[in-house]
Length: 260
Image (tube, rainbow, N blue to C red; front, side, top):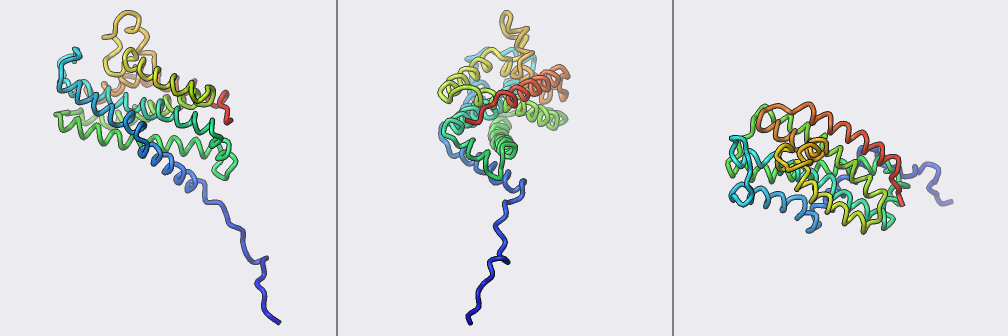
């Protein structure tokens, strides 16, 4: 009588722990952004080119308030990099994943909807770490001398900005068609760059923009970054604006996001 292997003793495969599932998906999200030439250009190359262009040329007249051009420009470019990654890149990628049914598929796996969103946020932070490393290294080579006391404050501002713009990305990606998101995300980034108080303080903008830009998440993030690196202190008004936008956009994204 030949022996047989009892199937009752064989345990079914178990899903990985939530943290491991999120980390695996986050690594995938990060690789997809960094391997995509268009995404890499928008998130890293364009901000780096803008930084060098604004510092070494005087084509754009800047009122630096007595600071060097590199000290004045770098905080705003870092803020813009966060916007390009957390908003534009993430909105477009999520919208096309939604159109292609990827989001609906992943939401039914052990990763779940909450795990998928958490992985996207971690992926954004990982790409931002690359952005900050490249841009900060470039700025230091150009003579940037940030206020040391402002470095941890700037990191807090970056996290708040990431939260606000990731929430905006999810709202746009989850409510519009993919083709519409592609247009809206790029146009909105350009508009916020030009008139949103990112690269220059809101009070230096013309007309009504001087009063409106500071209330936008772009203006608040720009002011927070400039305050941290130039003065070693972040304006509380900028923090309040970012927190309020994060709460409002986060609620709207959770309420109106469609997975298919």
